[in-house]
Length: 256
Image 1: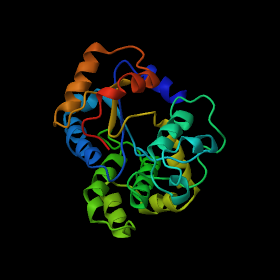
Image 2: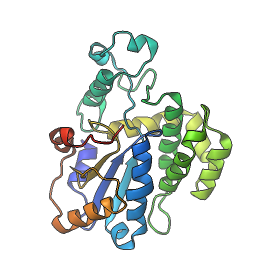
Image 3: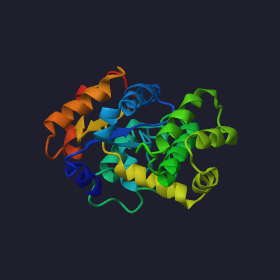
Image 4: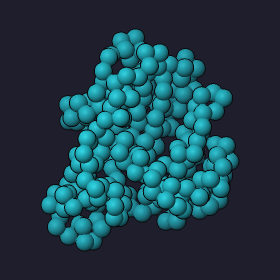
């Protein structure tokens, strides 16, 4: 309930923007590179919003209570991606769940685009864990994600240390802290935190502005318009769980 409360009682001075994404999704990359980057570069818009990018996306673990939800009986044994398991995981273990099963975050993590995506997502979660606001107020993990995403297609499987180092340097993140997180339990905790913050959703990028789903658009000024509209209206309690359920059928034209 903590995640919902943060959205419901967001500061009246700032618009809360939550972007749920994953590595390897072209639509996520497009949204981060265009609407988000454009909004952050617009001083007026940037000053009126608080941005949180959650890099867990459509990944999932398989708690025991979700085993029966598999659409393909062999998907669990073969480690194949299964939409039934994904939907069950977020319903049982995602944002806003009061009582999660004890095995929510145990076992193998399954990512929509395979192990490479899992590795990138883990680096993103670790970057977020160790980052601090820059002088401009922008979290340093955001340029790290953008930098890593720009080379995603060039990576075969293992994430090269040279890419991590160069993107960390550009983002003013400690390479040592980042790698220590990735290699240890801190990386597990970082991913668990992002999983617990991710609500049920039809696909990614899933964008909430003050708890309400933003109109799907990849135009450069899409987020600027959404934030300014929300700032003018400033709706009261935009409850996350309600938003994700009521508009799921309206937001799936171009998503992963």
